[in-house]
Structures are given as structure tokens and as C-alpha cells.
Image (cartoon, rainbow, N blue to C red; front, side, top):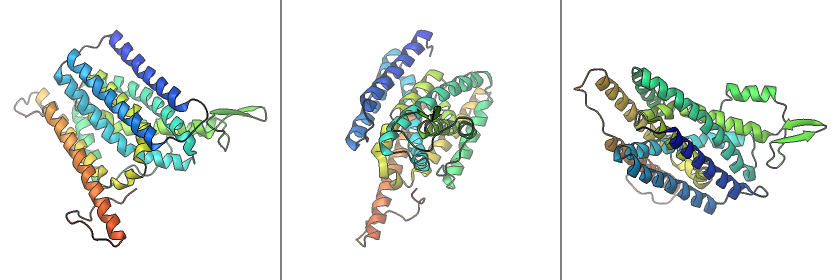
Length: 333
């Protein structure tokens, strides 16, 4: 797949235009709370936008690359849902007013998108030159999957190096001034906690990319598809944050579903690396099978999680509980 500079430029301009329209429609005027109806409409819009982009790819590049994009998008979106947990922790940690949360998420995600873009360019160039890195990526994904399976999630927020540096170097106020990023106090220009929490969201999301980027490179080697799948997954993330709300606590098996997906992609990467380095008898996993496995895994994870949550709620209320749903699972976050 050969994407010209013009193709990259048009894609970046299109993504930026959508984000600016989103910012103008949602954030114009005084800060206001994001309603459930608004969130649902915007999540639907971004999902349909990703579907439309895939259809365009079908006519321009063919079915193989379209399937790779959808598999990558579905994987990134699934991993992003798990990342929302830590976003809730960050919002609580910095006591962000609800009316300002959507703007914090948008700017934080823009920072993350820029940094991920650089990460993807470096990663794509390295993988094109050093095929042995696929072994490293595959083993890393399997190791990450085992960590998720053991319950080593990302519930705890730890300030990273960039965030600590910003807090130490840049003078900040101790309170919010609506949605302003800077304010003048006693003749000094200070940043508000709004800017600090945006850096926290953006830089923390980059740490999440340490497993999501290798995962999508296991589905496609095309940097263009890796970037666009990440972009579409990230653009709808802030609306998904408000739409899911308390539902996240009910997805108790989410980490197990994601661990299965990461392990599957890790094994797929190692098989492809073996095939590319002379072991031609090693079977390869077709992209259509990857797409089916990822979709079915997330569907089963969601359904079983919701059934388990319903079972627990009925038991706590002293009502008759449906059978067939076990009590095992991770503790809701």
C-alpha cells in the first residue's frame, strides 16, 4: 500500500477538520455538562465515520487493507475502553469539574494523537528494517496479556516523568477558573489545573500505546492504517467516556477479553516472524480470522460481564438470580 504525501496530507487535514468541528460544536460558549444523548450521538457519528473510511479504503486499496484497518480499529477501540478507567482516576485525582471534563479529554487526546503519530513513524521504520523486532513485539504482547490475566491492570494512576516535570517547572494555581488554561494572578501569568490534567491524560495515554501500537502492528504493517485506526479510536474516546459512565464498573471481564486478544495477536506476530525468516511451513493467521476472533472475543466479554453484573445485583437485592453465570471475575473498579 503506497500512500503519497498528498494522501497523508489530506488525511491529516480531514482528521483535524473533524476535531475542530467537534470542538466548535461541543465547546463553544460557556462550559456545560455533556449529556448522555449528546455522547451517544457523537459516539455513533465517530463509529460511522470509521466505517465510511473503511468503505473508501475498499474501493481505493482493496479488501485486504480494509480488513486490516477494521481489525486494527476494533483492537484499538477495545483497548481504549480499558484505558477509560484510568481517565476516571485522573479526573478524580485532579478534581476536574464535570462541565470541564470534555474539553480536558479533547485536548489530552490531541496530545496523545500527536505523540502516537511520532511513535508510529519510528516503530514502522524500525520494523521495516529489523524484522527480529516482531519477535520482541510478539513476546511483549504475550507478557502483557499474562499481566492482565493475573489482574495487573492500570487502575492505579502514577505520575509520569513528563507530568512531574510540568508540575515542578510551570507555576500553577490551586483552583480552576472555568475552562481557562492560564490566568493572571497578582501580576503573574499562571497555568490552571486544566493544563496539568490535559498533560496527564495525553502522556498517560502514550504509556498505553506501549501495548496498543505493537498489537496493531501485529495486524497490519502499514503505518498509514496503524495511524488512521488509532486516530479514529481516539477521536471518539471522550464521548465514549461520558456514554459508558458507570457501565465501565460492570465490564468486570474486560481485562480477560483484552488479555486473550493481546495473546492472540502476540502469537500471530511470532508465527509471521518465523514464516518471514525461513520457516515457511509455519502457518499464518489470515486477517479475516483475526477480525472474527477480536470481534467475537469482545462480544463474549461484554455479554458475560453484563450477565455477571446483573447476577450480582439481583443477589444483593435478595431477588432470584439467573443461573449459568459464575461468581469468578475481577473486582469492579
